[in-house]
Image 1 (cartoon, rainbow, N blue to C red):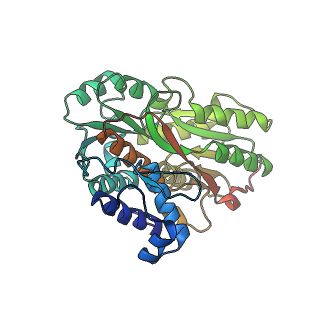
Image 2: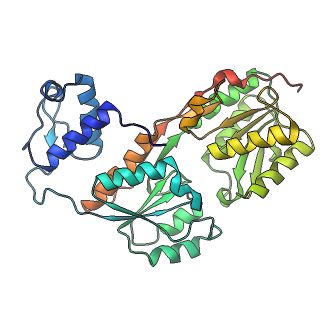
Image 3: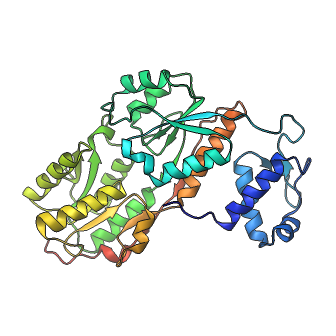
Length: 355
């Protein structure tokens, strides 16, 4: 489901529209004056103005000075409408919250979003086949949803601008947005260790490991070592992104020594693992902790709370829309903006099994 816009986002949307109508010239009115006009608190207006700064519509002029309106004296006032192609990881990602919100925000900004004819999984994650498909599509820019490093590297060779929405973007000269889960990951491993967990596993998709362990996996391994926990191939369990592949991976884990905690990178996989534990082994959260490194609003309905990493989904999408706006202005930024994640459901990391 789509989350409601915050008051600050609504204020930013109103100010954005007034800027496009060229209501103000040169500099923005002060925060207090805008707060009175909108009937909201000054801090709400400040957050809205900061958002417009991130989008490149405003610039700070120094302490106590009104913000400068960027390109206020240039015509045309309206930015060009772009066709933004989206390359999905799986076909079912079309209904993902991030993609639905991205589609809404791009449409509100006057752009058109179109999906690639086939997803990365349908093309067997083959960088060459994916690049060939992309070159045949009419799009002004591309957003890649959870792409592997080889795929992103291949698409960077194409003339069309590319943006990574999640995926293995670190160490690549590519614009992108996603989440910074590393601190939350280290904290979770430390809490698990303090609760008596000794067999902690991270499920990792084989398709994302073609270039070796990524930053998330390396941080996980380091966290195990820092807590004097043993590490082997057992702890980094690969699976091939199919329902059968997931079950085979879990069967292998439980055939010898069952894990006491499992990290998963997708909220739907979290549900699939929980279903496996209940129906295959009659286990619940007291016997094994399943931690989602992905966020979904449905977690708020679970009692007790399922352990998961939380962040602001709207902020991730906003960075992508801002990048498209820069492309419309003829710029091609390559900065990556990550939203900090935090551990929630900490109380569910306890364990009553026998190590």
